[in-house]
Image (cartoon, rainbow, N blue to C red):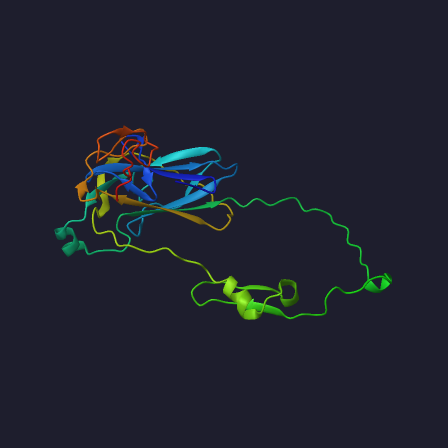
Length: 263
């Protein structure tokens, strides 16, 4: 997944897994790593949270560089790898159920760069210096709209729009036609896996811009079928209706038209 010159992906066996929206399919019992890549010309900081828990501290990525994070970073020298398992009934009774189960959240922020101050000359002119000056519009109050569901505040002169307050505000109302659904199959969690000797070092921090977030949803079951093979980006997709194999980038079967992204 790509956002603001930052890339995040899930890898199994050294291969990048394909994403369908924000869903990533991998078999239960797989150990995986998280690829972080900085495509920008300045440094970035990134932090990983898994199942609602912090998995790493803030990691620094140099410009045009990448890192495969394969373990929980509680110690700089060693730790347990990320392992994806099914959230069984026994696990739910002992551990409980969390809303963030199966979610990998990557928060990243770009290094703040300050521009060299520019010298600007200001000249003050008064309207009465020009006899032909006439004001375009008389003074008009500004109208402000707010919405209880979202933070939405905008103002503009009434005469410039030709709208009444109610009409102007209604045009700013957010349009949200998205529906939410609860995923009941394929729920998994990440637990400590085998030991990893991946090492990290401490570095100095730096001032950054506001952070952005990428979220990936790990699933181990789709359409009542358990995922047996990781769906890598180079894996040819087989149509469940006619059996034709299509390119990894195809979304529909070219023979029968069946969707290749089965939820």
